[in-house]
Amino acid sequence: MRAIARSYLRAILFKRVSAMKLQQVLKNCLLRWKEITGFDFCLLNEQNDIFAATGLSSPPAGSILESFKNSEASSMQTDSGCLYKVTAGDDPAYILLVQGEGESFETTGKLAVCQVETLLSSYSGKSDRNRVMQDILFGRLSSAEIFVRARQFHINTGIRRAVLLVKTEGVGGEPVLETIRNIFGSRNKDYIGSLDENTTAIVHELKDVEESDDIESIACLLVDMLNTEVMIKARVSYSNICSDLSRLPDSYIEAVTAFEIGRIFFADRNVFGYSHLGIGRLLYQLPVEVCEMFIQEILGDESLNSLDEETLNIIRTFFENNLNLSETSRKLYVHRNTLVYRLDKIEKKYGLDIKTFEDALTFKLAMLVTDYINSKNNA
Image (cartoon, rainbow, N blue to C red):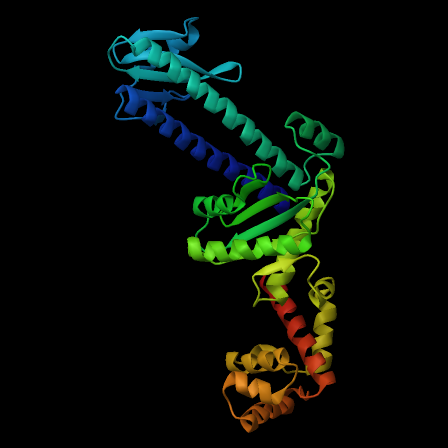
């Protein structure tokens, strides 16, 4: 039920974001028409509300608008200006009000209607294609339906693809989307869309020469660009390469799984590849009860949660430097004897001498398992 609710909320959010983008596109179009002609333009939606306008427009009364909608005429002169029907698909969906005077007034109105209809048609096609890609990602379509939709929207089913998930902290939305689109440039066959306020999905079509290492490079570039261009911290996960469009749902799950495992076990990283999850992938499959039994067996009544940040930093640095005391003391700017003293305190508390390989391995596993248990308890 939760998964269905999340999918439903994502669909609603996607529609709202799409409507906001369309509204801005149409408003920019009408503003350009005003700059050229000097006329004012006002686009009304099916509810007779102003959808986009170039100024403070006063639409005709509702009765006049309804009468115009029900008539056979494509345009009608009123005290407020001239009304034009604007179709989206086969049915009238908007009314364009043009206010002004001059010999070119009628021609200008008809040309403006043509351009608005072209934008609506183009945007509808793009929006529908994006919606199809989302439906494929979330596994809402069968293999047969994917094939039919792919032919309808000219989507190549046999191209190699990978799914990337970009998760940002704090601010998300349009600034993030625009930065990502700028990174991918003119690659208009890549799908880039918001799944929620802080999550963006990318379905990247790979060139013949691109492999997994290139996807990781793209992920690192996304993190760096979002940090430098819009000052936003981001983490990126990516799937394995899939060679068939029908396998995209599996790739999406791989990207989600990579992020979850990376977030738990590799908190110091910001890029997570599904094929580079190491022991985290193995631990993630274990039941919490088994993990708790392991911690009880190794640490007894003690808990790693009681370690302060300074001690944790010493342990991590010691492991990163392959249990080398001299190199670790140099990196931490502490005397070697001081480092030995701190490590001896850990041995007295937990009964593990992490200066030796076997106990260091056990302690490292205990740290990973503890992170996993904490994440499950806080979920």
